[in-house]
Amino acid sequence: MSAAESIIRIENVTKTFGSFTAINNVSLDVPKGSFTTLLGPSGCGKTTLMRLIAGFHEPDDGTIVIEGNQVNGVPAYKRNTPLVFQEYALFPHMTVFENISYGLKIKKMPRQEMKDKVDAMLEMFGLQGMENRFPKHLSGGQQQRVAFARALITGQNILLMDEPLSNLDAKMRVEVRCELRELQQRTGITAIFVTHDQDEALSLSDWIAVFDKGRIRQIGTPWEVYFKPKTKFVADFVGVANFINGEVVGIEEHDIIVKFNDGVIRVNKYNDKFELGQAVTLVIRPECISIIEDKNAHDLSENVFTGTIGQSSFLGRMIRYWVEAGPIQWIVDDTSPSVRGTLQGIIHVALDKNKIHILPKED
Image (cartoon, rainbow, N blue to C red; front, side, top):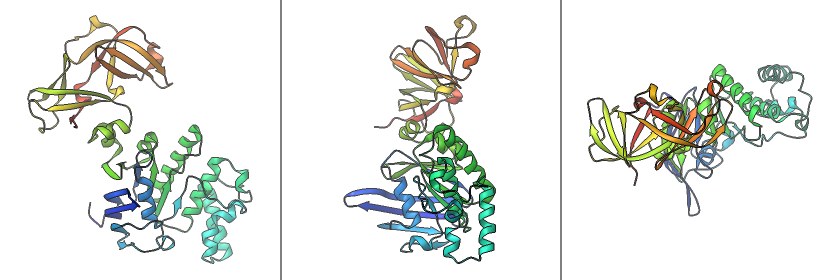
């Protein structure tokens, strides 16, 4: 990506706190008008990077460029990068109108112009009729909408969000994140979002940067991060996966043959980087495995394994099974639970060779 295409450019940034390195030589380009998510476990560095962008911390090394200007040393209030926190940070003694209009009041905007802008924000976020309420009289979702409105009312092109939905219940989280995505697309702002919730990241983002121990392990679209992870860590953190360690024992024109324990798996040959005898790890998502009940109706000779259901978990939209097949425990998702109900006993699982991702085995 060229500098002209990115609204935020982070180049070789490092940040330490005492002997702890929170960010280790990280580089990241954020495209203008995109929704980019920083995803990773607690303590991985994602919030530190967000605060470096906002100006609450300064990097020890590297540069941060926002809208073409290097901002190292520029205080937070001059960066035009409002940050919405998970605690909302609303002023409890101010009404909804006063909270939203706070930034405009600081800028001494004329009263009628300020009222017009606040009214537009109230309508945008579905807060009409609530302008005279105090935060304690609002639901969690309503408080979060007020926080977004306050951040956006002064017309910035960038919005930073540090786990802003974590205090909402599960249903409200889904509703607010849909509204947030629709708002971002409608206004064209550039959003950077911090979360450890994989579902949130996958559903909201144009781009995801997966963090681990102060480094970015992969940057890509949600589809790339989920179905084409570059490391086992990324595959394991972003969703659920079956990992099969094996050895390449055959390379054909279209397929790679991988031997594991006493079985073999045929994998679509989507690149040429693997060699005979190489140790590899297969990544197979649970929803990419089919369940076969009638063994006589199918050819069980290729990529099909027989096992016994050890346990199951009904999740509404699917049933997740743990299938014991010799030394392998397969995690299998049946995405049509309303058709056949919960299965028990012996079943057969079939792997689609086109839906298996292959990685070099890590030491």
